[in-house]
Structure formats: structure tokens, C-alpha cells
Image 1 (cartoon, rainbow, N blue to C red):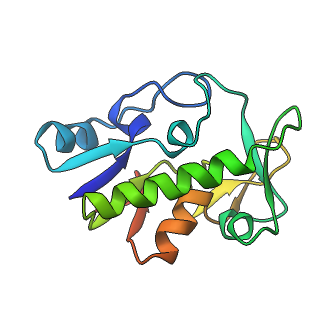
Image 2 (cartoon, rainbow, N blue to C red; image 1 turned 45 degrees about the horizontal axis):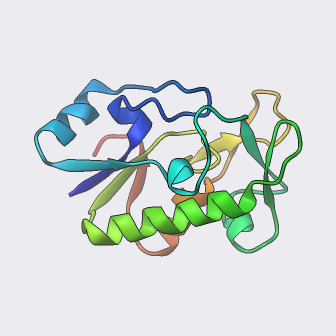
Image 3 (cartoon, rainbow, N blue to C red; image 1 turned 30 degrees about the horizontal axis):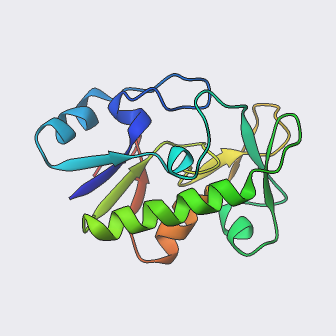
Length: 148
């Protein structure tokens, strides 16, 4: 089974209330080969919501208490991102996911690149909070731009 970020399946759950539909991924869900979930929504964040970025590191640093996830106006939303990551981990275990496809650049889902924490549009190498936790637990995590 494949676990896919809800926004990639066309669900309007992104911070700006939009989605980033990837038709082939949506087709996998329609065929029963995949399920979808959004760690940010599962963590209690609203739709729409203020953009957030990781300050002081990447998702692994957040999990280790060395970095925070903060909104553009400065609100600390770290706890909600961690809560969502653990709920996504539970979902991955529940469906026995052999691969998890997440939205690149997200502070939750980035699997190789995230924004640098300055809200400037610049990206750095690193994992989002959910991607880091899933990788830590042995799941194969890729982005929508990778091939399965």
C-alpha cells in the first residue's frame, strides 16, 4: 500500500487552502492502491493557515527539540507539527505502507528539500518533520517528483 499526502490527491488542505493535484497519484487512490492523509490537518492545523517554516534546522532537529516550526507572524506551531507527524506514522503502520509519497518543500512533508526558515522562498536540503519521523521508523519516503 502507498500512503500519499492529501494535497497531492487533490484535497484542498494546503496552508493556502489549495491543493497540488498529481493525477497519477490520485489514480492510485481511485484504484485502491493508495490512501491519503495530511499530517498538518491531523496535527490540528486549520485550513487555510498561515505559512510555517522550520527555524534552526530541519525536521529531525524539530523531533530532537533543537529547532521549531514557526508561522510567518512568529507563532510557534511545533507541537501541532509533531502531533501530525506521529499521527501520520500511525497511519503508515496501520495501512502497512511500503512507500510514502509526500509534498516536497513542506515543513511537514519535504523529503529532501525544505524552506530555509526565513520566509524568503529559499530552500535548503533537509527533511520536514513528518518525513524525518517516517524515515526514522524505516519507511521509504519520497516526493511527488520521484519515481516509485
